[in-house]
Image (cartoon, rainbow, N blue to C red; front, side, top):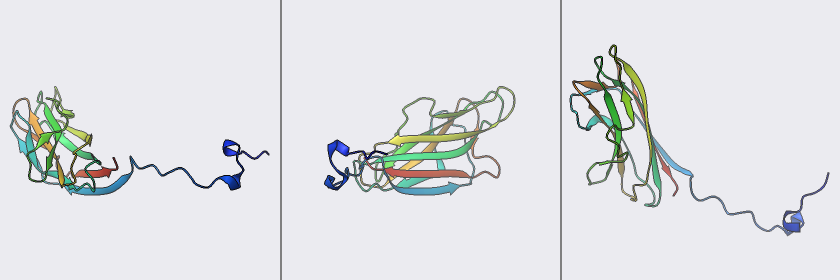
Length: 163
């Protein structure tokens, strides 16, 4: 078996290892659950009360990654239930971080009422070291819809990722 010599040096000539990777590391994780059902008949996105999670980045160059697992309830056949994610920086107003009229999750059934499992996730660059709150917003196309089914619990997780 031969000995591999990095850059034609002997092992004893190596004085330092490469610097550690400084980006992409998970710096903190915050988790939350919410079990209270939220319903709306709004055809514009509205905040789903209680479906939020806050994290405070240690640096404005870091990113936030949020993942939320829930259930959308269209409550009747032929009705669409949409969900998306908004961000609020401490003291500011809510901003749609997805920027899509239909959000990032939808529940629909042409036949009957359906409870659709939905996972909402986004990698965000809030450019702040102030508290950032991520919140689920929902809307429908006609009639009333709900978020969270009977006896369900929504899981919310936010990560701070080194920028």
